[in-house]
Length: 491
Image 1 (tube, rainbow, N blue to C red):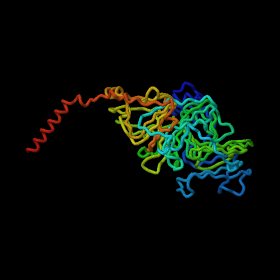
Image 2: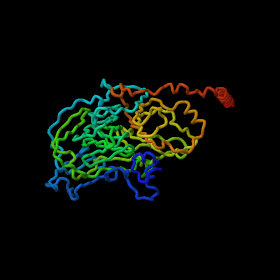
Image 3: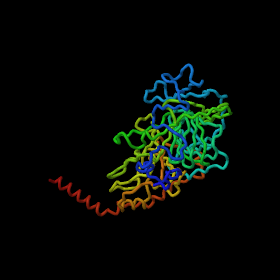
Image 4: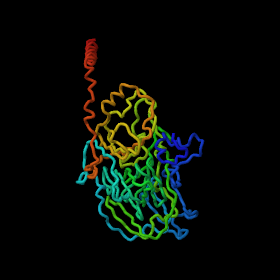
């Protein structure tokens, strides 16, 4: 249980088993955000939300009246085809001091040499390898680096111009974005802070996101990242041509995993100033900028279902086996992004957080396996078993599809010789996995990084052939079986 009574220290949340502990068995009023979060939010996932910084601003019964109150401009963001089915249609109406179209044109920026968007084999700057790779934490630069210039791409699949694919990044930053906003015109960002909180201003309002929380910012939306805790680092999963959604629950029923009520969206908070601003756009992996003489965050009111959101990972409701064997890791899925193949997601975001392990007569470590998915793992805080001692917060571990993996013989032997106790798994720790049905290729940046190291294959050299030690017993069984067949045949 947290040591402080009011949970003002964000690190206290890393010590709890689950968010339920913050409620102290109903002895205090319940709350839905961490105590140091300065903002108010709306609850829900995929809802049609509505928010006004000034009551009475949003027109009712229509979206685009001849005159909007206070002389505001109506602007729609349409994220899907106009004729998309109602359940899939994504849009938002914004009522703002000046529309986004009021800018001074675009200019191309130099390429970010550490970022990549084309993961097709024809790109000479990407690499293919079946080797199980890992990277130590990425250093935060000494020179001034904000969230945009601090993007470092590690692996991915496809290309954003094909409207299906994904990229995995690390961001490192030591400087807040000042009079500068960013727009990802390629796809959707799922951001996972590992070091330092992010104070994110969006057109829909602010979001305060700390290690142990995630935030999703959709394609085409403007945002600014400030660093209230100083230097910051984290991970990003970017998807193209699709959006993140909650996985189906199937036989679990109506509740469990990430519950929709625990997702939080911003409330309107406008900024109306006349001063120079720079808007950086990422399009096809290239970077462009436009300038304007007004803040891009001048939205007084808005409504819609195409809005950024955040989620506290300590609220995840783990499920698992209560008899024998392990259930597939899909039970750890927080968010999924569909591909055109309805049987295989483009990407899943999985977490491995504190939970109980009670399965009996079961081999406890991950069983030796090969599977179709590409797996890129990271650690937000704490420790994670099953990886090397060098797997620490900020690290990356990667395995491509169909490459065999599992623990060394010492762990195998211990797990088969001793009965596993009923125990808590991953106390004070959250690891995650970016998983995809697509094969990943590795960027030049990651391939040539001094932080890269390989999983040592010698760790499996001493896997003992226990089967051969039973040769005499096996021969006797086979001889008896042959004799029985001969006897049955003669009769």
